[in-house]
Structure formats: structure tokens, C-alpha cells
Length: 147
Ligand SMILES: Cc1cc2nc3c(=O)[nH]c(=O)nc-3n(C[C@H](O)[C@H](O)[C@H](O)COP(=O)(O)O)c2cc1C
Image (tube, rainbow, N blue to C red; front, side, top):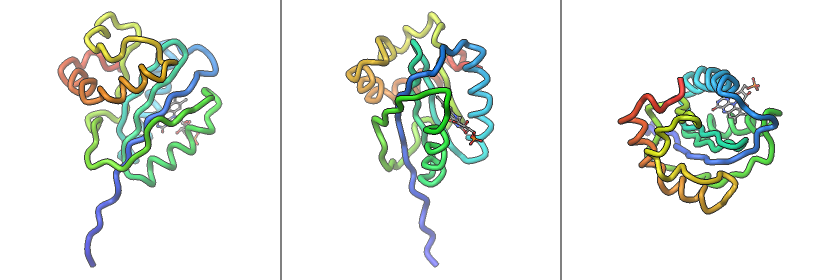
């Protein structure tokens, strides 16, 4: 029987936090995300600014769709809008079970595409177009990744 590789998918969405997330809240969320995602070989990136989440999820289609179902039901956020959902050849975030940029970090200016409001469709599209830049900056500045 021929081996058929699993389809890889990338999903990108934004959502609104139901309450303000402190750095502590974000760390707690990340702790859980990273544990679940490592088990399911899901990779990604989470950014939080002014009560808006921006998340990239990558993995095998079935795993990512299952996760998205769970995330959509999570009462910690609402108004989830999917901006990107496509099959991909390669992952951009395979180094992180969930990378996260600390939103208070003054060195955030290293990533020009992260400037600006997450409420603006234009800014979100700019971030999406600059994801490879975010990946390489995270690799060369690992201290930017919230741990
Ligand atoms: C903004 C946001 C992003 C999340 N990202 C992930 C994630 O990457 N992986 C994950 O397993 N859970 C994530 N969660 C948590 C899920 O919604 C869910 O609580 C978790 O997967 C456990 O599933 P369960 O509550 O059905 O047991 C996220 C939640 C929020 C609010």
C-alpha cells in the first residue's frame, strides 16, 4: 500500500478576550496550550494585544480542526474570525508548540509588522504576510518568546 502523507494545514484567526488577560493569565493559557499541542504535533504562535488574540495554528488537518472546535467553544474569548485556512507544504512555526510574543516587551519594535492595532483588517493582513519575518526574529531573539 502506498504511503499517503497527512495533509498539513495553517489556520489564522483573531478573537476578542472575554476579560483582560494579564501576563499571568497568558502564561497559564500558554502552559496548557503547549502541553496539549506537543501531544498532537500542533505548532503555532499566539499574540495578544489590547484584548485581542491573534493565533496561528499549524498541524495535520484533523488535529487542527479538532483543536479549532475546542477553541471556538472556549468562553475566555468570543467573536472569533478566521482570516486564513489553507493546506500548506511546510510549517512556519515548527520550533514552537505555541510561540508567544510578550506584548509588554520593549524589544517588540524589532518586529515592525506587529506595530498597530489588531482590530484593523489591514494590520492583520500585514502580520499574515510577514509571518516568515516573525519566525526568523523569534529564532534569533528567543528571549522574545514568553515562557
Ligand atoms: C486564545 C486561545 C487560544 C488557545 N489555544 C490553544 C492551543 O493552541 N492549544 C490547545 O490545546 N488549547 C488552546 N486553547 C484552549 C482550548 O480552548 C481548550 O480549553 C483546551 O484545548 C482544552 O480543551 P477542553 O477544554 O475541551 O478539554 C486556547 C484558548 C484560547 C482562549
